[in-house]
Image 1 (cartoon, helix red, strand yellow):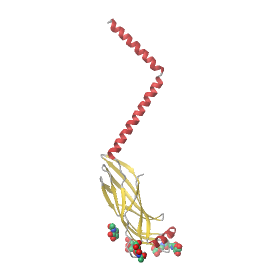
Image 2 (cartoon, helix red, strand yellow; image 1 turned 180 degrees about the vertical axis):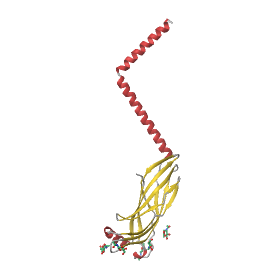
Image 3 (cartoon, protein in one colour; image 1 turned 120 degrees about the horizontal axis):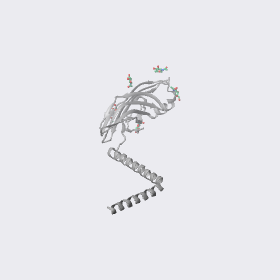
Image 4 (cartoon, protein in one colour; image 1 turned 45 degrees about the horizontal axis):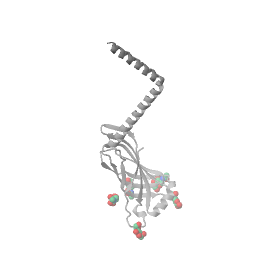
Length: 218
Ligand SMILES: *[C@@H]1O[C@H](CO)[C@@H](O)[C@H](O)[C@H]1NC(C)=O
Ligand SMILES: *[C@@H]1O[C@H](CO)[C@@H](O)[C@H](O)[C@H]1NC(C)=O
Ligand SMILES: *[C@@H]1O[C@H](CO)[C@@H](O)[C@H](O)[C@H]1NC(C)=O
Ligand SMILES: *[C@@H]1O[C@H](CO)[C@@H](O)[C@H](O)[C@H]1NC(C)=O
Ligand SMILES: *[C@@H]1O[C@H](CO)[C@@H](O)[C@H](O)[C@H]1NC(C)=O
């Protein structure tokens, strides 16, 4: 009994002395453990994000213009551009675990920096590792294009026109049971289009060459 009491007293005494020692530098002990906590949280969060990235490994969508036909492209005396342009495009989702909802797709056509055509593509869904065919068409006339005259005259002489076709999209990603909203990738294609047949002096048919497009995710 006495021994136990003694031991108890010893224990309490040693505890008290320990407490006194730590209170000498209580602030730096607190700082130190807070820092350790923050660092370990940061490492854990980083590891979780890296693991998620490894599992889902997001890859950018791949877009090509496979074929394009410019059946009419003329600049009238009053600077009105008359155009008929049909494109055949492929959009590929290379991801194994990410599906994509294309909720809105708008195609715009530009010539020498001036927009001349606008059309929309119906919304579509794209599963894992699948491709979709899109065929935006532009028909009509765009007035007041005086600024394109020089480029038009030169490219008509060369036998082909360079047209930019951009797709402005609103998409959702579906990853397992989660959906990610609010992404608006922009797709930019610079296509070299053989001039409509009558405009060409050379009767040899110029074939359209498959063109890869740039994709900006943000
Ligand atoms: C591209 O379209 C034109 C006109 O529709 C067609 O004649 C041609 O065969 C197509 N080319 C390819 C590679 O599909
Ligand atoms: C261009 O499109 C317009 C309207 O769709 C059509 O009337 C015209 O025949 C087309 N012209 C050519 C050369 O394809
Ligand atoms: C320009 O010419 C086209 C065809 O010749 C015509 O359809 C259009 O109305 C004209 N535009 C203006 C602003 O005069
Ligand atoms: C375009 O420029 C040429 C000379 O560079 C001129 O003859 C022609 O009238 C111009 N066309 C238009 C629509 O301004
Ligand atoms: C027409 O174009 C082709 C290919 O660009 C070329 O090989 C050929 O010599 C040209 N013919 C003429 C008559 O200019």
